[in-house]
Length: 136
Image 1 (cartoon, rainbow, N blue to C red):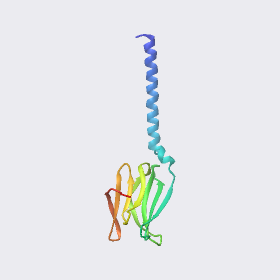
Image 2: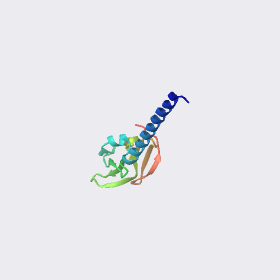
Image 3: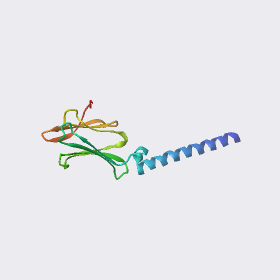
Image 4: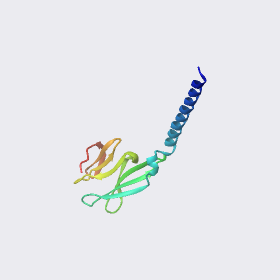
């Protein structure tokens, strides 16, 4: 093996080692502090009145213990009391928001990773999520 080939192999090995180190370092960073998009998201609360004005849909973005920003959904009555808390949280990296049904009290959670979930309103409460299609 020539001297030039040995130098080329050493340089190539060093480049591959640095690339591997960068990938491992980035993976550890994501594991420890969440994705870059989560770091840019800020904690916020969005309130949306239902079509009949009886209820307010509350979408609250807050950081979870694993540093990932999550959207949490609840419903308040006219007095501002929480009457329903959604059992699911949505990672905001893939989240497109929460909507009321156009003429219903159904709640739609729009997400690009798991699709659209609907919490159907029936007999005074919201039922567990079901897959759905949201139409504006």
